[in-house]
Image (cartoon, rainbow, N blue to C red; front, side, top):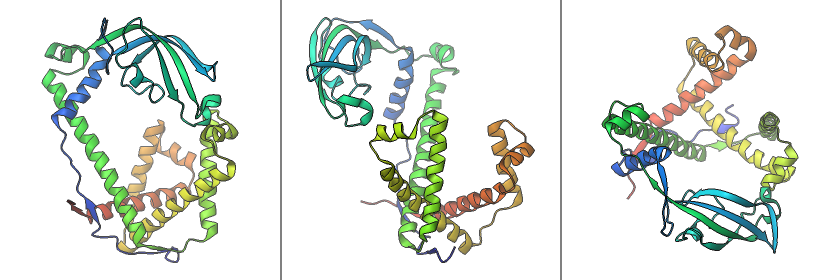
Length: 319
C-alpha cells in the first residue's frame, strides 16, 4: 500500500465552522410544509400568486404541432412548487379564473424529452380555477388528532429537534468531505493503471446490476443522459480514481496510527447486516461468504481513520 500513497499533513486540518443553530423561521417553514398535507383549497376569484393552486387545461405546440406529453386536461399545479418546466409557473403568476394564456418555455436539453429537448415550445393554457390554500390552525387538539403529538408545543419541539439532528448530520458530512479533500490533496499518489482499471470495472459492474434490477437497458440509460459507452467509462474512471485515492489515504492513516478492528466489532457489523435483511447472523455470514470478513475489516478501519481526521481537525471562522 505504501508504494501507492505517501501521506502529507492529515492532522490539524482547518475546516470552516458551520452554523449549527436552527432559526424560528426554519421551524415555521418546516411546520407549514407538513401542515400543507392537511390544507383546505378554496376556489377564489382573484389573480393567482405563489402558493395558490391552478387547475388548467393546456395544449403544447412545437413548431406548430402537438407533441407527446404536451397536452393535459384538469391538470393541477401549485405555483412555486417547481414541478413544471422551468419558467412555466412564473408565467402563470397573476392569471385569473377563466383566463387563456400562452406560456413560452424552452425544454432542458436532456434526451429523455425527445423531440422537444433543448427546443422552445408554447403551451396554450386555459385556467379553469384558482384555489387558495388555507392551512389548519395548529392547536393542541389538531396536534393530538393529526400529528401524533401531545400538544402543539410538543410538536414544535419535535420539529426543531428533527431539524437540529438533520443540521448536525449535514455539517458532519460536509466536514468529512472537506477534510478528505484536503488530506487527499496533501498526499502523493502512485497508483498503477491496473489498480484503477480494476476499480473502474468494479463500478461499471455494480452499475450494470443496478440497471438490471431497475429493468432499464444500458443503451436506454445512456440515451437518456446523452452519453456514449466510452464517455460513461471515462466518467467511471474519474470516479474510480477518486475512490482509490480516498481509500488508500484512509488505509495509510490507519496504518500510521496503528488503528485496528476487533473481532467483536466485525461481529456487530454482521448483526447490523442481519437485522437489515431480517435473517440470523449465521445466515448472513453464509450468504456473504468467508471473504466478507476482510471487506468489513477494511471498511471499519477506514471509518476509524476518518473519525480520527475529524477529531484532529481545527474549526475556524473565516471572515
